[in-house]
Image (cartoon, rainbow, N blue to C red; front, side, top):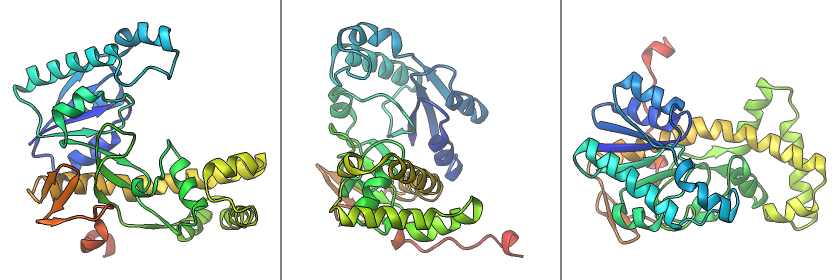
Length: 292
């Protein structure tokens, strides 16, 4: 396959996808020339295409303000059309798959219409339950909703914000067990702190992050952030970095996936809203060299 990975920073997800199976034609595109992901592409000998978005969006930023540029404004559209022109000129074809691997720009409807359902993204939370947001917020939403486990989700990008059909989810990460493991590495107290936050949420009938943010004091907010940042670090390793390569190589590259509209089929069976869960796959055999 020709797989185009869009990166804006370290490109770690791109690296993990390549490590799982390097025998594809990989191309890296970045809107931030010189980023670490470009350096990684150089290590692998992959094509790297760099085109800064800043000159394109300068006028739109002046009109709307930083962080307020409309998703489908003409400036974004022009940038994407030029970007895809560069990509397709270099590869001589349209890609088989597009992987957003830490890309910090929205795709316009033009790109979605052109490439759906070939665009994938990964999210450190269960998008089917609405655990959206950046950084540690998805885990906070899950905790306040009463979840005992968290998962990473690979979904097909549509015109919404993390609303696309789900292809796959990682194995679950037990929140309390993970915190106990983190306590052994840090100063401790994480489990007790979480129990206090959960008790506070129950007393005040708090079930959403917005409600917690409005009622909690500064210490409780800092505690929840500290807990969720630790959990997110583990979920990135055990969730994102495993389910994304799995979805690309064990499902799509093997011809096991079909998408009809918003319906996702794996091995001929229509998937539930949460997609194909890695729980269904046998755990990999341990490396004898690590257990000898």
